[in-house]
Picture (cartoon, one colour):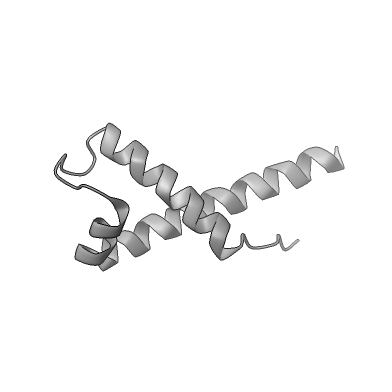
Length: 70
């Protein structure tokens, strides 16, 4: 079964939440001021963060669909 992919806006919103949590837990240096600065300075890291957020949204969508089918 194929699940609908999240929209770019959903991925962006989830990425920003994940970034804020990562800063809070100091996964990134505390001097990383904003997501925009991070994304510009570490394009690979930003792409990886977006990929994590996208996979999380797809897993949540899958779980929601499975719950409906039960």
